Length: 427
Ligand code: GLV
Ligand code: MN
Ligand code: MN
Image (spheres, helix red, strand yellow):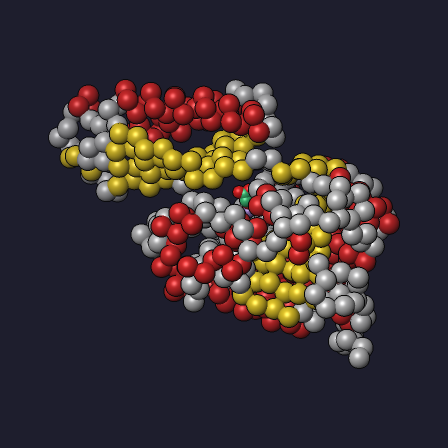
């Protein structure tokens, strides 16, 4: 049988942009794109993607953590796979491209192979990870960690900002929290993990290049801080007698910014979320929660920075008589991309007629979790103005097309295990 030989009337890039817009319209906030983990909109998006996977000739299912998984068999059934993926959750008020570009492009490549009836000596799997952003439950990479078999079950008890536990959210989504282990895959099932993603920075644009080869994904530490003081009347408590948790948090945020600004090793620190309670104009804030995200290109540097900033936060809390609770919610070392995959990506870029340019990723990606069970390679696609995690995030159609062409070329020319230290690695 010649598999799915329907005629494609649009280019790969046009099809990708069309689907980016369809997925970008599935949002829990009117006029904004917000699709967080285990929301009903995430479920709607999952169903749409599963349909696209099936149309592309894949068998497809939702796994135990909410990842969408498609499989395109190789020349024979049951072969190890080249896994392609990215995520389909978003930050709040997001752009349309961060995550979905990689999922949609991978599906477009498989659809192209399927239209031509082309099977390869290996299977291709496409995964849309359900939580890469970590917006809802403080911890991040939940989808890829579950798939890599490194999901930390204690996260099930964490609660979102509305007090809903991850356990309950999974049940509402239609999944069984005690069954997450079923999402885990083993090293022997995967030949490699490849991800195409928008760059989310300005480097490729500066280089005037549509695509680049990622060298490594920078590590990150995330912390959750809670300062508890004493709520009180905004009109009656003299300034010297206050234990204002929000004023304390403000001082901590200033200290974090100052610390990172004066660093010379590429350290970046962000307080991206803050909540003050009880949250009224005329009440001194008694309790404040905020997050801290710290990243640096070198793991030791980031770890040292965290070790130095924590005592500063502790000292601020103590001086202001605030009780501090500080927990590390996420810790990921830098994930290097495998040389043999970088080489194959570079060759594909060259064959497509572009100059080969290597760059590191400052943003986190699912490859950080996937590296526990597979060698990882990444292709970056240029984005306009380096803007990301913002509704203005944009990829030109020609660049989406270039990314797809390169990914397709990598797949079709893929030499499994070439350069890999051991082809017989067992899970
Ligand atoms: C994900 O986009 C991250 O880098 O936090
Ligand atoms: Mn992303
Ligand atoms: Mn992101």
